[in-house]
Length: 163
Image 1 (tube, one colour):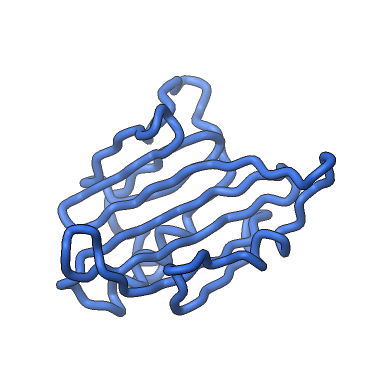
Image 2 (cartoon, one colour; image 1 turned 60 degrees about the vertical axis):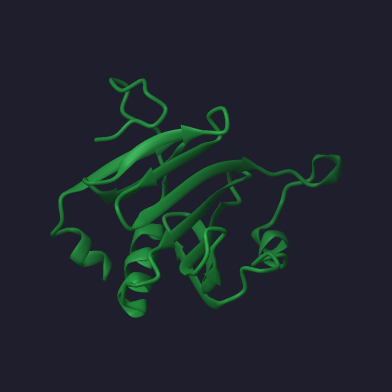
């Protein structure tokens, strides 16, 4: 699924810790781990988004390259993707892995890095194993590329606000 195709669907924008992400309207949201993770689910897919501040030793600024050198973490190696849009440096790994519940699943593990703000969003997207590999990969990449640095509108005070 291409980003343009997402425009034809009914979508909802969620906000979390200075970031936004857009998914289809049938996703339900929960805040996990004492507010650290926005978790979105529908019948066949899970999307998790968390925000992290980074700082090198002695307060030196972090360069995206430092994070990219350690990506992906062990066990999440797969097909690599990059994008640089909206002031963010993005990197992702798409892989098939065995789930904790038996069987396999498709996983996109991604970072969206803001050197200017010294923070990054970690996004993990898990798709059902019985779905079309290429379609799920396209969908997951399109969702990841909707991530932006963005606070909710002033009228909305919920952490996992949606629009």
